[in-house]
Length: 604
View (cartoon, helix red, strand yellow):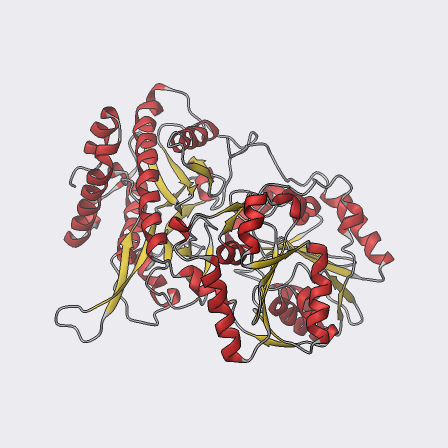
């Protein structure tokens, strides 16, 4: 199984570890320390040896930050994790700082004292994050101090070993563009701009640029590596040579000089000695690079990572792969849903057994490389915890009269999937049907949206919320995130949320996942992945518009749909979508599943 369900985190050791950290900080003449959840690549999913925030605080969420001062400590979270943090963190040791209500800056200004020295590891923070932090710390009359040695290095004595998995080449039939052409495009850009080199920071950019994949992180096919592309000559790839087979090394050597990660500092020093003009993305590259380059004498230019938009705009091969992966995934999910409906009244099911069964169906395709994240299988009130993950201690039975939310995805060589369905166990209440249908109305509004060039996700986020807003309801997470091509299930720069993001462009993939959460009772979320379609003229219109192609293929729970709340065009959309689901999947599933699918996709 790709997913394990053991309990991780919890408040058991957080107070003693916090005390030990404060002692270590005194030895470094620091009065505080700030520790993000991220690793040096700003990854959402990090390797076990990089789970520093989890080790220190007991919090296992995918986003957060600990701020340690002499007398106070805070854990910065957002609305997704408040319920989880309350359970996992010792709240006598840490203040919970929910950024939906209180900013980190506000908390720091309240508790930092003039003359304080707040330490940070420059490898773990981007340049822009450090710039922002410096302003807040200076406003408090304190000092932000980079540390050469992270104090957790000496404290975390049983730290796991780094993984040493082999690197694989991503086939050109799925990548669509050779690595040499991608690198040449970047070098042409550098030459035109008069730059000597660019630092490529994020691991998804490195994987995309060199057409390589790996298994160094959970559920994301990344390779722990570092890359710099000069305007002239071969790119530089710094990766542990033990991960390279002769075949992979030979293929990479055609486009890159390969070195060990330990050789990176010397290469950066060389750029400094040449007084090189170096470009980097301050939103994704660590402060460590900035310090190394500026101290050596290089001039830095702040520009977006050149891989970011190119990677987000899927080419023809990547779009074809995404469609194929979603059909394959739809077959597995359809088989699972048919099994689930029959098994619920006949068996004693729980969250873990259901998550395992869904992975089993995906694995039977013989093409599953991994799941794209730990499956959120949430029964009853657990569904109200937005990023809930079932564990041995939290595992709930699936009971009649409740809702069951399952959010899952697969990693296939040709694409990455992510979908959520909410299922009624027995007859749903009127409130459940009302809330589900309001969420579905927002889901449809986004799926059918038309929008002009330069439209950002912030401009259309309200489409998915309007029906809920009109009922005095809302949800505290983004409506949609970008998705990679056998890369990260959460990919920028595109998104659909209240936060600003890049303009949507043809070929980008985003999720469509409005929700509603009633604490202590149930959670509802409905998610499909959408592909942004090219501009096209609309009869009678004056401007061409983009739209969305729905990639995900899985029926909605018809028992939760209150048709009275739907307009005729919404009913027509659901019926057309269900007809497509049946037509694309019906011929690829067993007879029992086909019969179930026929009923599940029948017209409303």
